[in-house]
Image 1 (cartoon, one colour):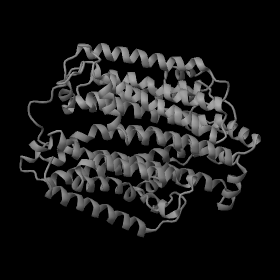
Image 2: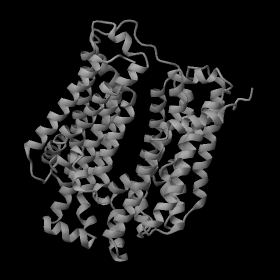
Image 3: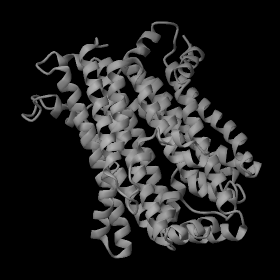
Image 4: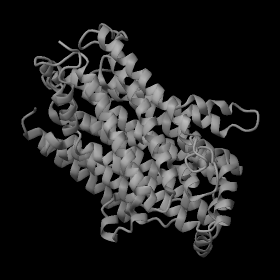
Length: 533
């Protein structure tokens, strides 16, 4: 039988399963780019204002670390600088999730074994995962080519940017395909792919922020760096796209070769055997939950510390950067001058920290459903541990992890900003408090996930991530999209104090905390009463 037999059928099945997730990813990436272009065009309408912005932004090493090099001062060039790298990063995340979901995750869950009993070739599942991811990136190209010219960007540059972002995503189809063959589980495969993505971001960041005589060549070693090096609105280098496409083809060929060599259900990397007996600390569901999450929490904390330290350091020059816009300068002068600009920037960082903490906590609680469907909850609940202790342990780890991430973000941003202003200690304490003020709002999305696990287990995972995605869209793009105030009030972060610099009221924090506790208790009660599975 042909090794690719059944690929078309499995691909259609994969696209059907992703009919909600795939359009959501594509829409969010497109909306981010389009809203960025619209904002720059509105805030910096003149060539002189854009040139002043480009000089300040392009000369700040911390901003180059976050966003990349700036090639030109047109609206398109500023859009690529501000969001091009991050759009490519989100596209790579979308690609990794799609490929591993339809390869290693399906194999781990036993779905591939069921499909393999029909007329399905050995390479069909891998081909379906790669084709589903390629379809998502093709849809991203089409939507970006339609949306970006509507914001006033040149059509040729819009096409170049769309192709660069999608080509970067395609590069990670091959990387994710190889990771799915190396690891023995979906979690390990995602970890490998995310590790490569993180290394690509760091290489690009070091290369872009390097000064004269520094290792600027490192940007060429990163698939994310190839997006900016294409220079979509600064004389496009079309040949750079061949680097991403070549990496995608090479990765796919290696993935096919590895898939033909390994045993079903096994990875090519050996599993590390655990100890023969459990530690004395591993006595109940709480310590088990901590043991399972400590590695993921350490990874999240490391990433948060790095990003927010650099972002905090960038706050030193944010006033002069935004002050090149007459509209922003007049508004911030009315509010209090450059101090108000810096405080608003730091408050926006604390909002992003809250969203990151909510994302981590949500991932912990949707793990309850994954443990249930994967058969891991059954042996745990067969012991003296009941469902309430099991659920409470995950809630405790999720809440503690969210607090740790917020504290890490606040301290890192405070140290980054304080070291540049000469007041590291006071700024670290100030931003630590500002970050922890986001905790009640950050606990609400995971509390929704807990409630969904209890009352709607079949849709808990999709519902939890959809709710968090809606909150993120409201917080990040709500003002730019002109959403009504009652829609903005749907997000819990709308009600938290804008610290540092804003007024503090205990009432919203109390109500958000009570709502999170009520949803968590409701979810636990429903989990206790319903049938598992």
